[in-house]
Amino acid sequence: QSALSQPASVSGSPGQSITISCTGTSSDVGGYNSVSWYQQYPGKVPKLMIYDVNKRPSGVSNRFSGSKSANTASLTISGLQAEDEADYYCSSYTTSSTLVFGGGTKLTVL
Amino acid sequence: EVQLVESGGGLVQPGGSLRLSCAASGFTLSSYWMHWVRQAPGKGLVWVSRINSDESSTNYADSVKGRFTISRDIAKNTMYLQMNGLRAEDTAVYYCARGGAVASAYWGQGTLVTVSS
Image (cartoon, rainbow over all chains, first blue to last red; front, side, top):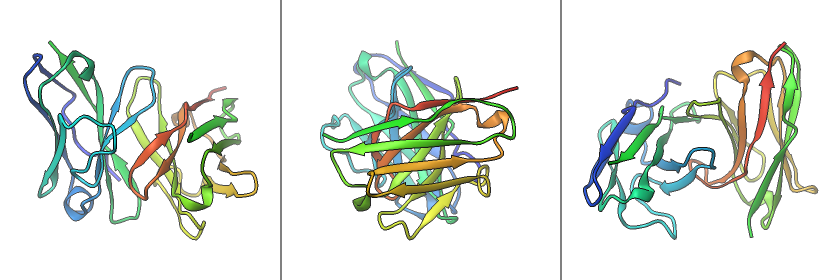
């Protein structure tokens, strides 16, 4: 159950688009359409932003989108805003009937 | 309104035990998957365990398998995490969350477990 691989940090300017990658294996990300993305502000509770690779829960801005290719999933945030500055985590179902998170990515809005 | 309130955290010595509780309101535990996720201070999220809606299936991360047990009391609408053989590396904020088998839209505020002598 190795953690999924995410970049430690990404940054972008307001209005730009950024993409956060989440790399696993065929035993997790590549094997299932069960990738989720969470946003977490410092000291706050995680918030579900994307589930089942590309579905948005009600109330989540359509500036957030998800995709997957082979063993890598991606979260794209378009029209970057200052309020998007947070930590982002991916997670995936695995062949062991468990879940695994990525190490997290700190998004900085310049 | 969906609410999840964790309790039971605290300071425990290595090798000790704790039982965490997650009191649910606004919904019935018997209708949803439930998860425990932990986060060590300054670190990332780590999935710990889940239990399905009819309690027929439970799963655990390798790091806690054999030491932690997830359960629930439908009458009290409360989920539990019995933690035995605690180690320093189990120190974390423990969140309970309502799923989805694989995604959780509702999270509690967390309870801090500190394992130290």
